[in-house]
Image 1: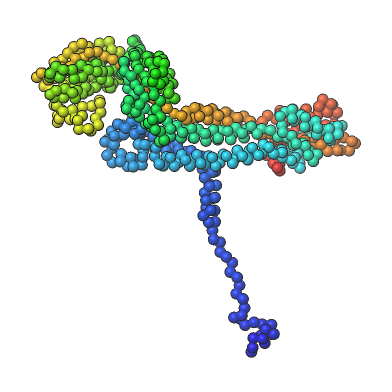
Image 2 (image 1 turned 90 degrees about the vertical axis):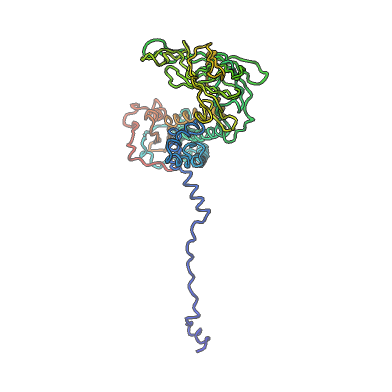
Length: 552
């Protein structure tokens, strides 16, 4: 059978039939779709709250564990005490939490999440404020608040009066299709947005301070001057983007430090006031000014704030070497051993003594008295009423020439490169001199000075953070106090030439008296309750549980 014959018979060979087209299988949302999905998830308020919780949770180790930026010596001591746990915590950046990559990632994600959530909401809110109020629902009687009455006024006159009454109460009013639509209370949502935008600004301000700010601690003894340079700081923590050349060139001189203490009762010895009498210059060649630096009364100079942190004693010593030459003459800051009575300890290093270098370990008792056993010396009061120091002498190699860093409050190499001098212990009062055995030299206790510790803090984000915090409080207070209110008035002709007026309201969270006052103002004295009994119906409040939301 030929092909033409097959066609004429109305059938085709199986091979000649066209195969059905296959339905294409879904190819997925693709990379761009996944990015859109991820962005939507990141910019939800739920994600922002989770990230805010993670920031608070991540800051917990920073408040419990010592941090390198504030106390590097405590971090080293922690690592020495915890040989197993310490290195693992260090790998997780637990000793430098606020500079850790994981904390920065959470912080940045929180910032992006808030920005992506709040900014579109602010734009939408702005557009809705400029839009017309929503049209009146079909059945005003089913709203949570509603009222119906009749009046002799024409419908247009009723709507005109409704416009005036509602505008007088600062409603936005639109009259169309026989009804007046009014709305107000956008300030509540504005406050909510202000709170979130202020929170966003607060995060930005904190980041600004961490990037461009700095903080440093300084110990300043009486009659000495501090110049704001990196070499003068005992401890300095710069921001990530801070440069050393940005330090303001101010100077501070401590003339006198005074501390007052309780002298009687159970609180005897407790400090009542600290006062550092200083002179400062904002710039070289500038006018010198005086200031009393006290607790919670910082000095503002050079864009920074200088805070008083603490104080201590700095005994003055004169050390002569074996040749009789003055090898050291200066005050030495001592660190307190017990805060109640200010018993303090310190070391004197004399690398210029010849032929052997000299070093001393000393303990200071500001008010020295005999202990209960009559042998030991204790301090009975923190003020320097009867200052006494005990000296322990050493000679040899202090180790400063090796170039290795040393603490100024600790002697290195005792028993190795630095040997105790036999009979080199002595108790000294101000003005007394101790001649070291073997002609090694002498040390004289010249007197006692005081020092104060200061914190110099420059934070360019401080003022923006304060403004953002104030705005956040105002925003959240406004969002709680103000609620959205909507009122609709419909006027339609009735039999007998009268007009039926329907009033509906959505003023949830606000006193119903506002709605009642609006209805009373619309009805006026002539149409008020009791003017025409039987023809008017007093305003009624319906159960909000049976109300339908208006269609917008």
